[in-house]
Every structure is written in C-alpha cells, then in structure tokens.
Image: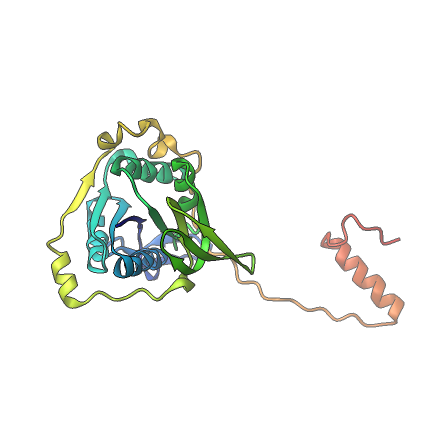
Length: 270
C-alpha cells in the first residue's frame, strides 16, 4: 500500500484582502481561512490514487491551532491522518524555512512513497516550497504535472513547462507539484463533513522535530527573505501614438521615441 503525503496551507479568502489607493493590501478579516486552492488539486490526486490502488494519505500544515479546521476538511475529502505544526518557533517562515520544517516532519514520519504538492499558493505565489521539500529530502521531483497517465510500480506523468508538454517516467519515492488543470477537486459529502469533526489532528511542536532538524533553521531565524509589503500592480493599458509626415520623418520620429524608452539600446541607429 502506498504512503502518500500532502502538505496543505491555510490561506485567507482573497475577498478579505482590500487594497488602498497606493495598491497596498491589508487583510480585512482574519477569520475563516481555507485550504489553498492548488492544494485541493494535490489532495484530489492523492485520493484518486487511494481509490484506485489503496493508500494512506497524511496531510501536513503549518499554522496556529485554528488551522486544524482545514486539516479536518482534508480528512472529509479523503485524507487518512492529519498533522498540524504549531509553534511560535515556526512563525515568520519564508519558503526555505517552511520547506525545511515540512521536510523534517516528513523525515520523522518515516518511509513514504509519494509527496504531492500544489503548484503554488494563492498568497505567496512562488511555487518554491514543493521543489525545496524534495531538495531537503534528497529525492527527485517533477513540477507542473498536469496529467498522470500511469500509476503502478512506476509513474508516467505529463509536465507542462514553458508552454510545452513533457512525458516523464519515474519511480518512487518522488515529489510532484500539480497544476489546477490536473483535476476538479471533489466536494465532501455532509456525512464526511460531520465525521471529520470528530477526527483527531496530531499536533507537533518544534521540540518534536529536534531529532531530525536544526531548530535554528525554523521560522524567522531560518528565513533569509521576508515580505516587506503586498501591493497591487497598476493596470496600465496600451498607449498608442500616431506619426504623421513623410516616410523619412515618420521613421526618424519613431526612432527617437524608441531611443527615449531605451528599446534600441545596444543597436546603432546611424
């Protein structure tokens, strides 16, 4: 039976983020987090494999105790066990510290076959955590998986990279990051939702990971980067300009405009 691990992240409902006139975003309401939408695709991949071949699915999330609600939601959707990494030592983690903490947790769990991550999170949008987990664990990974063609002793995957599709054959253990195009996540039934309320969420603290990790690589201490602020890019549309005159005058005027914008930088216009 395969052992599958799915890291999931609690994110704020995007409708709760408001931007001021300068494009700086603030969270209007901090209650009611939800599972990162891309992680729902990852969980659905795991559940489909579980339905087809039989598997255990462990979901992991970092956060405060309120994050246990998304882990119970994951159980309602088909996960087997849930683990919450809750400790002030994990606070202010960037992608490097986050991936290191999750990798340390996976290492403590023991042997596994497959890790499935969402392509990215809707708040950070970096797409770094999944591949970094694989690097910490020293296992191969395949990113941007949009289709799984074969599951058995080996995996045959389709990866969308830079507009091109690549078919990849690989064996276990391996980490995948999957795109939103790979499936449509199922909705949990009312019975599954009610049953998940009674599910136990295992809570691990930094002390529980000491045997597998360097505590100085957790949280802010292990984060070489930080978010200064979140801004909304200005929506500038295309601007057109009409040049009139003879062909020679038009070319000269156009060349002058391109030089002003440094578009012709490095090219001789003589």
